[in-house]
Image 1 (cartoon, helix red, strand yellow):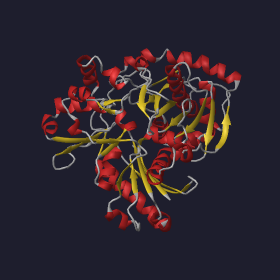
Image 2 (spheres, rainbow, N blue to C red):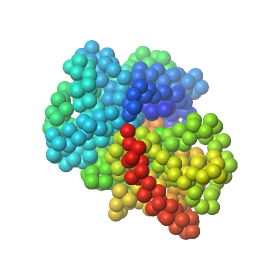
Image 3 (cartoon, rainbow, N blue to C red):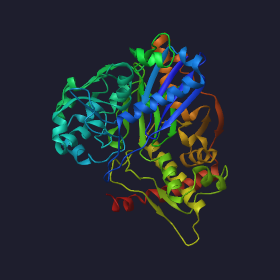
Image 4 (cartoon, rainbow, N blue to C red):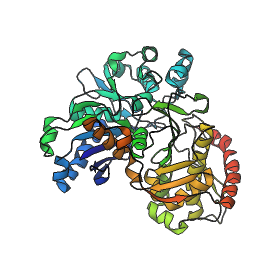
Length: 483
């Protein structure tokens, strides 16, 4: 048996996988985000630890024999978050998250100070990334910056608490702007630009490497006779790719999680910063990837549910499994700004085309379509050679309607897959397996069973193409309402 633990933004998930790589048990615990000021997004790192322990405790209660048989553990997690530790290893402040936009001014400073930043990191300086967050701390909270000893990403912090080892792997490290992504090593030049050195960084490993063992105390707590091996793990997107078997060049998937991702696996470092495309290391040795990123994907539907005062399932039910045409209402899903292709943390969302006859169903359909249109922007940003078929992952993959809208709006084939909602935790478990057994990625990372395939309907796809062109013309209006 193998265990995967995903440190997400809205929840922490734990899954058990068996010798066939199938999910045999899962548990989750919710997490809350604090937004004390405009553009801010923070969480308490201790909450992740408590949630992870509680999720595994539940598995220990429900599946004690299976958990006791675990040989390897992998962690995945939300990327970019800055956990700041002092010299006594105490957390100095709440973690600044991936969807925090406060450091947009520091991004401009980074770009001006180091003209080679995009060449080395392969990416534009974005507020979500870790390095500009540290520049903000240095400028706005100098006492905390002076006390800083280590910076850990969310899953690395939880793994340290579980094992005592401070280690980071290549996929998550790519999102810090401190990694030379082509060389798969920390860049002294990038670190120096933010007043830091390698001493502030954890050791580097590949995601499938064995980097530690579970602490004896936790092993006893969960009835494990021998502390399992713990892997390097992965950032959530790379972990999802591992769970989806997207490990070969040309493989792709679309994730409709809290944020949204359009992924393409590559056999080499292929930066495209001009289009705000992320070029990162994969969690597996010798492989890289590109991805377009949307900051509010399923988060947009969650916002609609909260604002309209109804559960998501209740909002979706009247729309059924298909719509005849695009909604007359348009929605821009820039609730937390946007990355690809706009790279603007201050962007804000909007509805357009409202009338006295507009009802709830039209608004909900517009939210689904707005996210799909943002994904089409990402597809355009990936450019030539982008996949024409995508597995669908994340919480949004539960909706057959959303899958169908994505197929029509992007003009690609969309596959709903088994266990699409636990992709990151599943991928983490696979990495734990490879670390424990030494098996090859090709053996472990098999593609999931496809439950349903949606191909573009020609008439609807044409209607969505026209609607997308109109939708794109709303972008200047969103700029007018920027924070």
